[in-house]
Structure formats: structure tokens, C-alpha cells
Length: 234
Length: 281
Image (cartoon, rainbow over all chains, first blue to last red; front, side):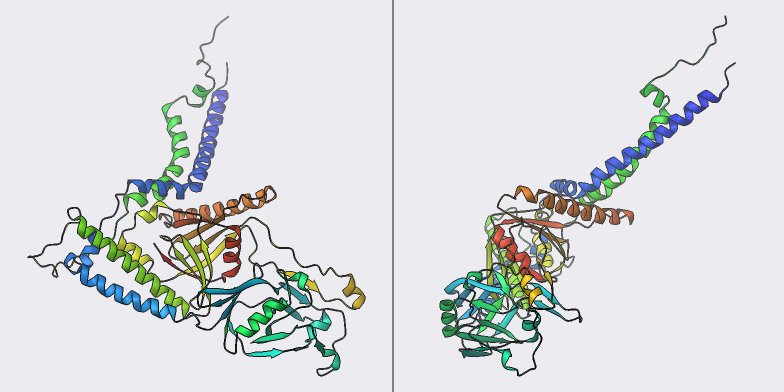
């Protein structure tokens, strides 16, 4: 006589497969639905009727539309004037550090544009936990000072980068003539716009945070900008 | 020989589902969870969707001049439309003014003109013409009052995802001496030519997807796949978190923008981590 274990075993196996199959199906379908929930919800919104203007008319009755429009036009005009006052009336400079391009502007007109060099995004580290990040700052800066035939007073990192010992503060080796080109415009905190000996690197991110321009561009920028002129860097 | 009577041998599907109970168990296990997800993520947002309710205060209404039905007056409709545009303009200009008074770089997105501008202190430093623009259907379901409320203040960037790094830093160890300095590679970093796709996640459920118009390079396909995988994982995680709390996932409004690669790169690299955005329709 056959024992009852075999059919019972079949039942256990059957229900185990059923449960596992159900769970797997649940996970597969759930995964698909989770992935596409945003899309499905978005498509389902086709069923929502387009909104009307009842809420707007409850706030602004139809008989006061004209008065409301007049007031809005006046307010918008004032806001536009306020926004327009932010645009400098004197020439200003826009620097694009992503593509290393500059634009010399006057109000909304472009006076001159061309290539420049900006910060190289290099982080210089030493064994003594010293760190310098060579990145041109973003935002609005102002021209603090202008100078012809500038002399570069080399900071410590200029020596460290070359593997040279750092000289004392007023040592003669700190003074470099000609590297900054014919003109210099100081933007504060050590940031400058100046010329370069390395014309082939214009259009590339190679500087230590200053903005370098070609000779003709630098001359034009130097002549147009004055103390207080704005420089926008992004 | 006695032939024993045994139950007929079933095979395949009939073995697996011998009774109705087995079918019910299988379907219950397999469909309960997907059904729950479907209801909460797709059905409920539609069923519970409500446009902005009209204020209940009717005391201002003059019985002699009842509110004009918009369905019967095209002239009033066009006047309403003009006033609504002015209201949206006012909100946009107000936001731009608020952002111009801060020191940070910010964005202004004008959907009707298809222009995205980057500004600093009220000055447009970059203006990007959008080659293509489309939005999620949720935006069409907003009435004017909801749009106005939604755009009344600038949006703040919470996080972003991109195929390119935000900044390409290079770490350079200071040389010990001039010999070591001479051996160091001093070549400038080449320009970034990678494919630019990025997603900006703002507060108030605004998501902006930006893609370059140029066809991506074949070498960037893995990077793009990884980007989409991460994006889908994020979306799935958010949906799952909401469903675990028995709430519908937050309805995001997604704007898809396509612009030139140069513009996309400049925008992504230019905006700060917590940038703000003024939006108008």
C-alpha cells in the first residue's frame, strides 16, 4: 500500500512554488510600476479636466479687470525700471570661466569679446598641510586699482610650485618684471586682470586665479574700465 | 493483479493550480503589492486632484452684477488671459528683483519665450535659447491661481545630477626641488568635451532636466546609462519612501529643456550649489 507522504509532499512543493512564484511576480510588477510611476501618474492626469478661471474671477471680479490690469502695468513698469537700474551705465566686463571667454559690455551692447585664461582648478598641496586652490572666483567684483607696467610680487606658492625655496618677504627674487604684461586691473583679495607671456594658452584654464588677456584685449579693457567698474565672473 | 485506484496524474499548470484556492493564493501574492503601488502612485493623484477652490466669501458679490461666466464671454476671457499674464509677469519680475539684490548667481527661466538666462546682480551674463522644451502634464492641470502661488517666490536648488563633474579639480603635489618640478606634467587640462545631461532638483517639486542638442559621443554611452540609472534609482527611492508611509509620491513637475552643449555646460558649471531660479510661463 502506498503511503500518504507522496501526495502531501506534492502539496508542499506545489504551494511553495505558488508562493515563490507569486512573490516573484509581485516584485517584478512592483519594480516595473515603481520605475514608471511618474510617467503613469503623468499620463493619468489626462483624465483631469482642464482648469477654468473660477478661482481667478472669485479673487478679481470681471468688472474690476480693467482697473486691476492698469495697476499691474504700473507695478510691472516700476519693477522693470528697478531691474534696469542694476545694469551698469559704464562699461563692464563679463568673464566666462567655463569656456575662457570674455565680453566687454556697455549697457546691453558688446564692445569687444575674445579669449582669456582663467583659473586651472588645480589644488597645490605640500607636505606641510599647506594648500592653495587655483580657481577664479565667481560673482561680481569691482576694479579697485589700475596700473601700467605692473610688477608681479610673487607669493609663496609661486616658489613652492617650482620646487624653489621660499625667499624672505622683501627679497629681490620676489619681484618679477614683465610677466603681468603692460597693464593690471586689481579686483581685490589678490585677484587681478593682467596680460600674459603665454599667448598660446589663451582660451584655456591655466592661471592661478587671475584672468589673463591678450595684449590688444587688455589694452582695450584697461582703457574702458575705471575704478569701481564691475566685473561679472561665472 | 489488483489495479489500485489513484487520483489522475496532473501535469503543468493543472498540477500547479489544482483548486481555485491555489489560484487565489497566487494572484493575491502576485498582485496585491503592485495593485497597492498602482493605486497610490497613479490612481489616487488623479482621483484626489483638486483645482484651487474658489474662496467661499461671496459677500463682495453684487447681486446686481453677478459674476460673468467665462464660457459665454470671449471678450472677458481674453481680458482675463491678459491680466493673468500680467500677474505672472509681476511675480517673475519681483522674483528677479529679489534675486538681483543678493550676491549669488541665479537663473531665470521664461517658458513662453523659451529662454534660460543666468544673471549676477541683475545683469544677464548668459542667455540660452532653448531648442526644445516640454513639461509634464501636471503643469497643464494647474490653474492660474495655483501657478501664481507656485511661482510667487524663487525656487531653491536642493540637489543635482549630471554626466559631468561640477568642477574638474586636479590635485598637484608640490615638487621637492626644481628637478622634480621639471619632470612634472605642466600641460593644461584639455577642454571638457563630454556629453552634458543634467537634472536640477528644486524645492516645491520642480525638476528641470537639461540635455544638449548635439548627439552624444559613442564613448559617453556608459556615462549616460549610469546617469539615467542613478536618476531612475532616485525616483524609485522617493516613490518607495512615500508608499511605505501610505502616502502618494510627491507630484513633481518636470521641465525638459534642450539647449546647445556650450550653454548647458556653462549653466551647470556656473550655478552655485544652492542656486535659485525665477520661473515664468
